[in-house]
Image (cartoon, rainbow, N blue to C red):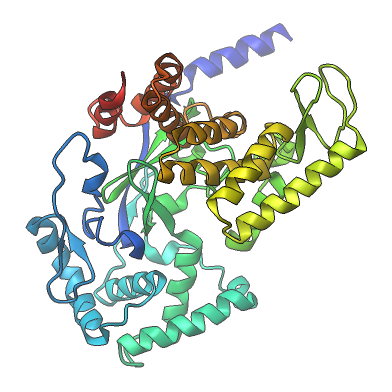
Length: 443
């Protein structure tokens, strides 16, 4: 028995591990589209959003393509670099103006045009193999069986044929491209973790999913970098995992989304053990400990939830979900948030959604006190769910610290700020503009 542990320790020492913060993968975008909502704020070539650092540096003005008047560029250099691919796109956009195809159709067309010009070049993976567009999964059979997705494709195919002649692209090829985009595309985010577009990355698409990822995905212009969150044994790339889902969701919801979107049942460590437990929960009326409704008894003071309190929870939960679905008024959302804060435990996913909606609306209204309360309500469950150095956890901590500083709650803000800065340094480094931006608002 003793020799077993000695042998295991020797093997462990000889293994090579990627340390937290180490670069595991760098992948160049194969094709992308900037979201229509932020098209005038993001350079279509380099994917930089200049305005997010307006507090620490001058903002460069994006210039719109004078021909199609759809895409924007931050410089003449980016416009020239993009012209080889944008030339044909520019012509069809100008032809169908003032109509603008949906973002998905524009991305499909960009990929089709790339393939039409011989875009089957690949990207070399860390293990030396070459990954090409043809290697991407399609799940065509499953997508054909989905009425919503197959109907959407028929509509998109008609739009492609409006932009080009019916003979330009064969429907079978268009369908393959559509399927590969559905299965392999990712949300491109800016430095503040806001969505700016959708992209296909050949190497990134080879990385498997885990609800408990061990790498951060850092988008840097046209490149995405995977930085280790924890020690990853060699071969690093084979053992790294990203999360295909950003929101905090209960296991059954995660599995449903992954099955419906990507056609697999997740068996990661989180899903296998159903941890953390994200389910209806209440605050103990005696000691404020979280009580899962599935247990009904407080682990700390052993008090049992009354039937009336459980009914109150389900009444609140139904109302909250209805208001969220209806995009209710600010006052209605704030009211249901305040009542939920007195009722719900920290493991409750409905309260998490209400809290997220609350802080965003409160921020837009300049109500920093309510913004802080919304962010603080979210944080305990995010700490349970996200890895310790997750960039998504950083986002909440950074927002919370900045909001507290604005309220002159300096000491409280510094605590969250220090934690956020530590996470930031790991994956972005001290020379990044994001680090300078954070330092600009510390008191």
